[in-house]
Image (cartoon, rainbow, N blue to C red; front, side):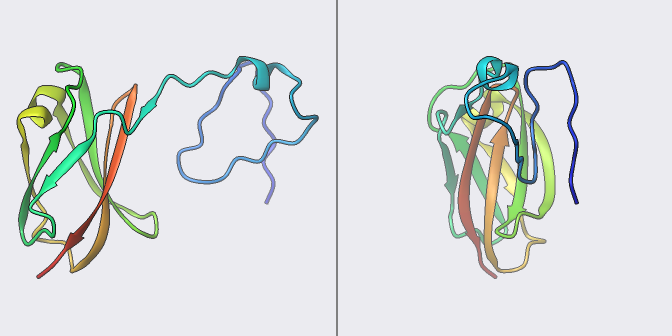
Length: 127
């Protein structure tokens, strides 16, 4: 299946998939003007206890923008989103309690992101 993309915008974001752009390398508006301001893995996530039995506490290691809203999502290692919740930076900095008692035993990814930050951490759920 192919996708044709025609737009006057300089950037686009692929959330879950692969973007394939064809054309000459290094020329065109897209390659010259697309700037991403997202900071990856700069806030640092601490999750304890890990392995998780029922509940866990998630906390930022570095100070985030305190009033920014963050999306906390849980993913399988296969890339399936299982759920999400929202919290402000100050809540996660002091530590936010999360209930993962409904998860089956296995490995998961917790992802915390806002409009400018994206951090992720692998964790283990045990029974």
